Length: 410
Image (cartoon, rainbow, N blue to C red; front, side, top):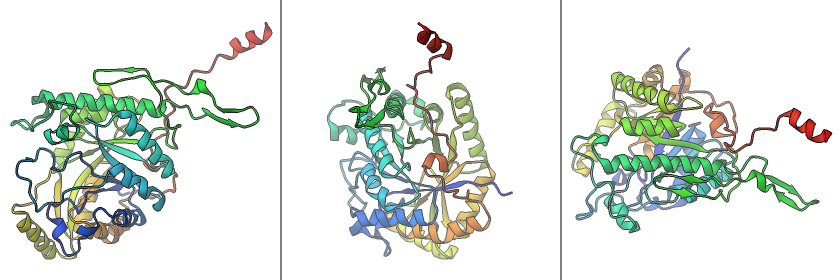
């Protein structure tokens, strides 16, 4: 039997190529239109793609891009990813909705309640992708921090930057607090008994009482426990420090191998971190591919060259880049499936063109070879990805039966 994977898609404004907005097929006037995001997500949903991540950032510039000479030939501005997902929730049927949230500035309480609300509006299809970091441009927009992550260290190693390591420690606390807030209401906390006048059982709503290096939180969420209990928590990881963040706190990690050896090394690091830090279900691993898709290889190369010329330099990415036909993309997905990943997340170079090509040409090829996990109709995103619905950590152990019998005998 063919190894099977779930397929995800990563949506980023006009696409992952910085010059994609200049393509004839692009919709640059619609990037802030709700209809644009509705159309993208419905296209992916109708194709049976399991989940869509929605990119976001907290500055006008790209992370670590200089603010001194702002390039005018790139897309600037974006809509809030959580709000896009909330808008799209009742307009889609099956696809998981996973907006991106930066952990350095928003409060965990606000993020927890926003994602819980998304879980209700989507009937259990919500997740979140957490991003660590506090660039100079982001700090300037908030005005509450004087120091943070100003650059990647020359070595390229996260652990060589105390600021980046601290940002990941903060992201870990953020994930912990969000999960605790999601757990703070037990499933049966709401009674709704009009006859007795009891709407809620206060004993089943718990203050989380968290005290850490970055956050000190006493209260409970204002949103009752949502359909999934805990919405899906995901991160993108490239190196040891973020691998450990994923292993300890995430349900799903996106990784960026460029070959089989790279994937094997990533899996080894993740497994070691999970052995040390993880409890509960195994971490799901999704490999990222950035794709530009045309009917012929020559047409794909021509499109990529045109975009690179507009940009002024060749496209570079942390992820492996596939420029080619639907068959080339399908082959790459099948190779990753054979290597044992749980899923593949495709980053379309151009939107909507490559989203449509993935939905109408790549997905049918993968289905024909039974590479994609079948949609079994599971109601929630967790169930669709074969992740159990966790019980609230604050559920009290039931009182032993003999103790109750002794009480009644008195």
